[in-house]
Length: 266
Image (tube, rainbow, N blue to C red; front, top):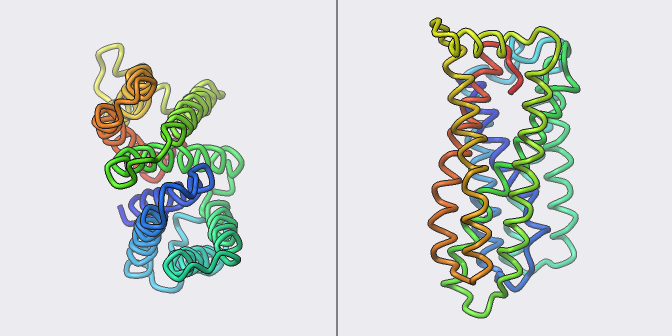
């Protein structure tokens, strides 16, 4: 479970950082400080769990064929850039903000690539990247909805932009999961079919939960989020985004579990 929570927490923090370029500076310095601090904390917590469980050697069994020390170094560099990026907003170091954010994302992407199993690295990287974007979009949209109570003149276009980003990442994530399940003799699809046929399969149950909670649920709420944003009802939109974030978090956590425990890159 250590690797599961490392992947979940690290991807969550990296996703929040990845969505910050889509948010205008008018959201206020406090928003960027809060978001970057939350991202740095979750990424550091995931890395700390990994170091506590495996030490500097890294989880060799979970990263078979990769260089665990490289994974830890890239993840640590990403966390360090995120921390200094947060301080750059605090001290108004404008020139360093873009460089530090880019550094956190680049080192994070390297860590994602190194954490992927060599057997299906390209597919695992694709699922990880879409997961990162979805986690970031869902989290940042919910947090930004709250900031309309802090910055009263914040234009609605900011939340509308994140709503569009959330919709795009949900569709992309669904397409990648569909691609994985449609692949040649995917075991996850076989287990899901067994459950649909009335047979017991613990992995199949989790596959269905992952699909229903993590994809079908959030997709069904998109229309409501968009309509509340269109009528500028930011409080209602934030309430719906709360539910959507819970479903996305549950679905992505299940996806990490299935990847580590059953080998399903969902």
